[in-house]
Amino acid sequence: MNIKFLLLLILAMVSWGISWPIAKVIAGMVPVPVLVFWRFLFTFLSIIPLLLVMRITIRLKTGKDYWNVLIGGIIYTLYNQFFFLGLKNGLPGAGGVLVTTLNPIVTFFIVFLIQKKSISKRQVLGLFFGFIGGLVILQVWKISLDYLLLSGNLFFLLCSFVWATLSLNSQKTGKSMSPITYSFYVYGIGSILELLFCWNDPSFCKVWEFGPSFWFAIFYLTVISTTFGTTVYFYAATRLGSEIASSFIFIVPLSAYLSSFLILDEVIQVPVIIGGGLAVLAVYLINSKHKKKEEIIP
Image (cartoon, rainbow, N blue to C red; front, side):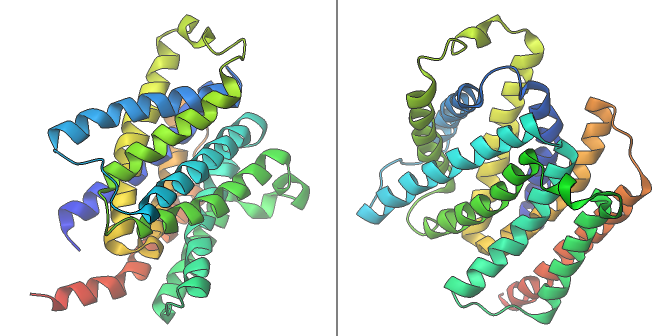
């Protein structure tokens, strides 16, 4: 695996972690469909310069490509609905851990069932450490079952399963289109879908009355964590496979908690550091087999 690409993917995951407290700040300011629409629209617009500068075509080659981007747009729209509903109604700290630790496990499980790919003992051990790391960050010994089943946390659980299907969908498009083209269509379709649900909402244009903090949050969620972070992830899914790319999501919980400390003044505790270390170990174990294969290639 190319070191520069590896660092870029890690940076993308860190940007995702920071997006959790930033999204929490604006989650309750307007209805979720309105918030998702503006996020998608600005992301869609921010991708256009990338297409022009990099001279990437947006032409789709086959009918299957049309179906894949349509399904991707629907799936990612659902994910964002669950994401903001969870942040609005539930517990953001728990959500950041639940989503990012379950994503790789669900993705590996789906790949194993559908694509019949083998999973090495080392990768299973990595998944185990990643899951345990997430539980340690969450400090489950302090949490009751009722706490985990709060309505907001159920949305976070749905996020995990929806994201796993999105990872597989983006992987399918890797041979026929650029990840940036895929992102272009996904956010364009998502914008149209959300507009159908919110165009007549009284708060649709209310966003223009908000101050700089709201628009900074939108800028970060669109350009940094979405245009940059998600496009890098889609690219990783096409190059490495969805199950390998999703393993890097284990980096997100620690960065989410550290950024929450800086943005929301949340208290950072020792279990967070320990759990984050286990998550990083998980990424190494899951990818170690893949690295060995690449080292054989001259």
